[in-house]
Image 1 (cartoon, rainbow, N blue to C red):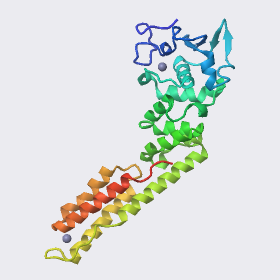
Image 2: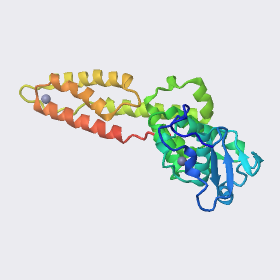
Image 3: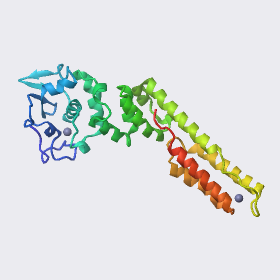
Image 4: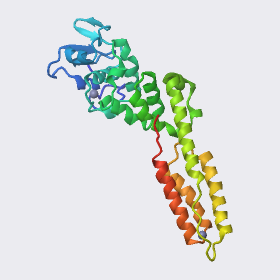
Length: 280
Ligand SMILES: [Zn+2]
Ligand SMILES: [Zn+2]
């Protein structure tokens, strides 16, 4: 029935058990068997499955009491977890590709992704965890299927990508609305950065060794570094990155009061930068 780990050259995940073991025949109440294209068997309770999606798999053909699902086992496995809203204990062996394909193919089996991939479900959390590494795939998927909460939460990880780097294909998939939202987000974040950097460190009353001219020079140096950052740092800049860049100005200072003013200003910039809204 199922290839074992030793004789399966096609095994794609590190888990020693096949994913179908999440839906074994020994589970309580099972009354329905689904078979994947690679001959894996998945046992489920029809009533539990159809509680969340009335028409689930009603379109698939049935032979000898087995519902044949024209999907690879990993994809069918994911669809079943989504339907059961159950976490997968082997989720580390589940690829993003198979999660995405499963969502894309749900409609073939009478299942609407929007009703299943909801916040606080394990499928949602799993996709979100992938969005840290692959935000474009997750955000595009979310936009395509109108999984709005997922689009919002994954959008923050897209800020490291310049909008010009979004391939046409991904733009098309996420749809005009979600493409526009991500462009607006980028613009807003960059504007916030520019606003934050505009204000130089505070001046202090002239003292011996640090008159107005010296302080003016600091403000001019700040402007140079700040405008450089506003151009190059991008929406995905880290507070730490901004901080270390701005603090390079300290090397030019001999006055303790100016140094303190610089530190206060940099602290302020990094705190406010960390608080900028970063989701669509
Ligand atoms: Zn599983
Ligand atoms: Zn000074």
